[in-house]
Length: 313
Image (tube, rainbow, N blue to C red; front, side, top):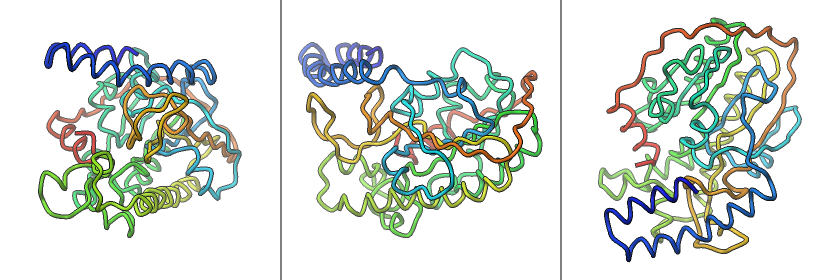
């Protein structure tokens, strides 16, 4: 609600009363659906309050796609996320608090944008400089290597390991037909749109079945790297997600237009029901809380470029 009220204020200031009324008509069914969802499922969980030594976050991973494709041994549950975007998830879980027993291995630009890379955790290992310019994202192998190093360097800390996949851009063979964040390899403004933006605008050159294949392919790729990582970390591991993603669904019970991507402040199962896959692997670590160590913050220019490549701009 707060987000949509702020948006409405900006619409009124920038475009006047007529557009404000149009915007309110759009937001009203979303807020009614949100209220119904919260009555049924509650407000969601703070991930730090759950029991784990390693929390692996798969960005934009829906519960249903994870349940269909996971082959690891473990117990599959679900949780309700505090946010329908990375920004909301990070802010509502970590802002204005300190977690000096946690080391965060990060690939998401919003951690820096929100200032959570400075004094929130014991340490942040920021991988935005490990950017693969050809793929337009951070390859999961870079995350595995950084997480292995963090596990060795901080044996008495909880680890949050945030992979960008299955979030766009798609990096597999099928996904590379959908190059970068857009649909083609030409360097035009149109090609810089995210796949979800193309689908929202009704781009008839896009085949939704191919998009689904590429999305699931992204999940398979990151899960193969997660499997590799699990061999080298001890303790109790949970695989989860910050949020899910729309792929053309129509939010219910009050119908709205079909949606793509993950808009802020929209609470429906496709966006905020996330996997919670529990893996017990040997002796639990003894966790200590210690003052934070210095972390190098990213420049605003770097953050903006990474957000644009990931389809946020």
